[in-house]
Image (cartoon, rainbow, N blue to C red; front, side, top):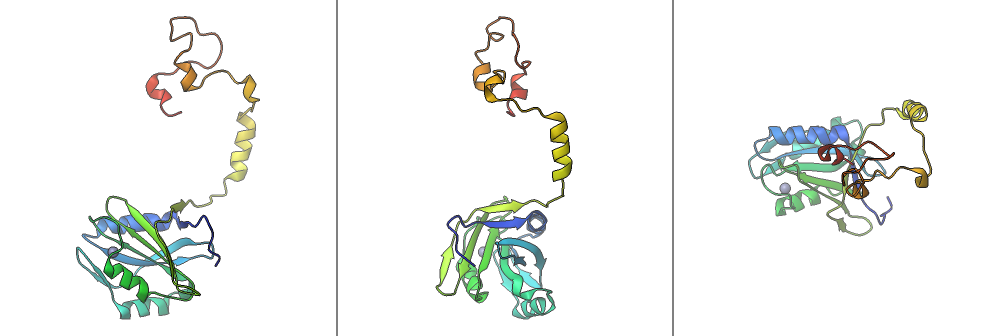
Length: 201
Ligand SMILES: [Zn+2]
């Protein structure tokens, strides 16, 4: 794995949804593990046996070993995600110890979340040097629904692209000084909208 300048963590949308559901369901903390692809996409999150309190989640080494033995791609299990429940997102001493316990020869992605939908993501590597890349961007990867062809057909059928100089002057910034707002008739251009409706632009 090459360390890129614009390092980021991506996570499959369904994995993120599961994490938020478990975060909502847990009274306090919980942990789960996930697989990581070569281009750092987290997916396939799974729970394993654990005893949780409001302030800690203990990884049962026997349950973890059983989880890895029965996993289809144990070598891909390189992500540890846990929730802090109602507390903030940070790396506690226990978290640091847990990350060290999950050390491997590639990398470990760790994500901590809470019930307020806050999160923090980091990558740790141990070879050839011990490095931690903290506060990384976390991007949700939406599923590819194979909609390119359909969207392209609809786009070509409905959208006419004109050169910018031929576009009517409809931008919100200039519309506020339009003749219509000054009590004059509105010649050409796009029909005016209510201010509420104009906010989305
Ligand atoms: Zn923690």
